[in-house]
Image (cartoon, rainbow, N blue to C red; front, side, top):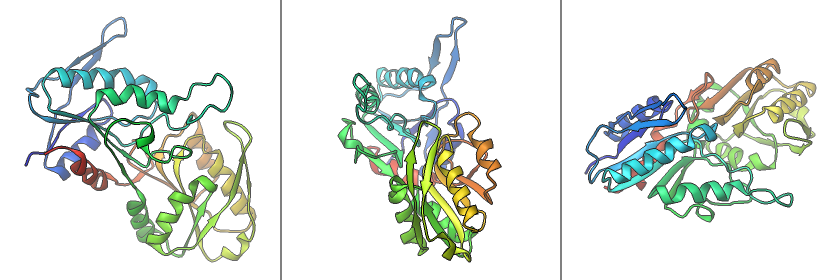
Amino acid sequence: MSSPLLVPLPGNEAIASALARHLGGQVLVPSIRSFPDGEVYLRLDMDLHGRTVAIVCTLDRPDNKALRLLFAARTVHELGAASIGLVAPYLAYMRQDRRFQPGEAVTARLFASILSPYFDWLVSVDPHLHRIRALDEIYDIPNKTVHAAPAIARWIGDNVSIPVLVGPDSESVQWVSDVAKMTGAPVITLNKTRLGDTTVRMEGDKLSRWHSHTPVLVDDIISTASTMIETIRMLREAGLHPPVCIAVHAIFSNGAYEALRAAAPSRIVTTNTVAHETNGIDITPLLAHGIAEMAPQ
């Protein structure tokens, strides 16, 4: 039984090496550089005939990565690989999943239609599903969603005494409830009204009865951090302890991390789906299990 050959695109070498250790597999780092005019040069220096290949590429800031990813996938195919998988710990373009205004591009479906013909299977970690309920609705290839909740619950159990989990909005319920079941901690769910791309208003009540607990904010993505910052403000006004902020994906748009730190949570922790200094929860064992399920043997 052979393990897939892991091919990390730039920036994914560390997680690919960790996955190889879990899977007993091999890593092939491609040679990728830019020509003077900015075009991509890519070379894979190995015989790939008949191999199962998993290209590892987390897709934060996807517009700078997409062409390299497609070039790598097509080259792997041309070099004779028997199966090509995409391992995207963070899967981009899930936000715009419907046409809210006339003429808008539904980029979730468009991006899926671009990637699907290049790959035979897909593994990702907690994609941002909202109106799209499963990746099967937009991706035409077999796929596996790995859930970070067990790793997050384990971290909370090891690091937080008397936690109360806080879901900053209704969308976060799916993440928070899974973690709550595993930790046995109580849950508070707040209400969020988005006023713009970077501004939100939070509403909640009966927070004061949790004075003896440590609030733990859990969400799938920290992007602008506006939701967590407003939630921290509410918790502080209610007299609760400084919260721990946890997210699966550390996207952090410009200045977001500094703004969140300035809101004075006790700690900010993310998983290693996207490399960031806040990474403190390792999901590679879970991700490796998902790859093992999907990769042909």
